[in-house]
Structure formats: C-alpha cells, structure tokens
Length: 120
Ligand SMILES: [Zn+2]
Image (cartoon, rainbow, N blue to C red):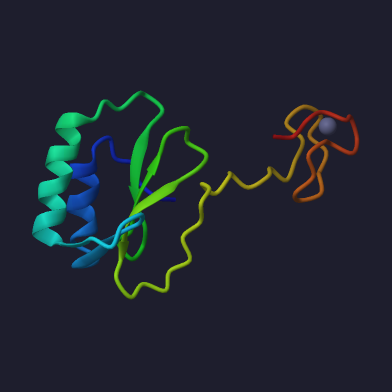
C-alpha cells in the first residue's frame, strides 16, 4: 500500500528518489528534481490541506493527490513512464469471512450469503 504524505514537499522528497523528470498532468510543463521540490514548497505554503486529503507516490515516482481517500488525481507523472496509474485507491480486499456470523463469503460479494450482512 502506498504511504500517505501530508504535504507535497514530503511526497516530492520521496518521488525524487524514484525518478528525475516529471510532466505535470494538465500542462506541458516539465519538472526536474530541483524544480519539483521548489514548486512543492511554494504549493504547500499556499495550500490548506484538510484532514482527509493526502499525497501519495507511486512505485515509479508519480505524485498523486487524494481529497477524499478514494479518488486520486495524479499531478506529476514521470516522463516516459508506462506505469498504470489508477484513478482510485485500491479498496481493501473483501474479507473472506462474514464479520457477523463468521461464515465464508464469496470473494467480491457485497453481502454475506448466510446471514445477509453487508460485508464492506
Ligand atoms: Zn454472515
């Protein structure tokens, strides 16, 4: 699971260990390690993060922002990356057993087949 970072600066410091050039998702701008750290510092000063918001860094060094803990906006994407960046956080795997009655449930099922309890 990806670590969560409270500031873009923290995320950037991790990202620069994985990649050295990023494109910004919505413009043609390209950042190197130094300009990424610089823009992150400015961004952090100007941005108020609420409790549910956080940044994350992908395996290859892409930096994403999540406002609600469910969807991810990928902001900085490593150049030439072929990584498949999911727009949503991986939801926890469905438990294999009903938390209420303890019967095994079909993977992916939303309700317990034995007692009908909602699984997730
Ligand atoms: Zn059950």
